[in-house]
Length: 124
Image (cartoon, rainbow, N blue to C red; front, side, top):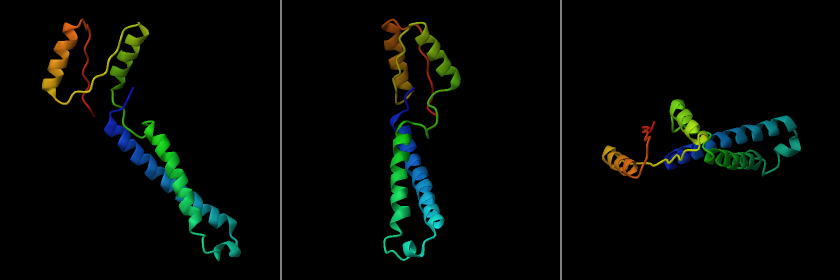
């Protein structure tokens, strides 16, 4: 099931934040683990946790775009209903509407076109 665009954006942001924090922690842990005085005197030593954080933020963004950090757009019952309909070979169409007037108009159009089962899920 696809997530609305705002959920992808939220999931991407969460992925970036989580990835950045994990990367920063790994970079600091690497510095502490090495424990070399020569390394600590190197002028670019702060770049190790920074680059680690940026790399993990990129990984978090990639994972976040998949929607892994977003709330599910559908209830488990409705998702199960759609899965059964697809298994039975029926066509399932998902349409995002702005308000109840547009929902009523779209429902009338779908029934007029021959739809037999129109379900509505309110955004969480």
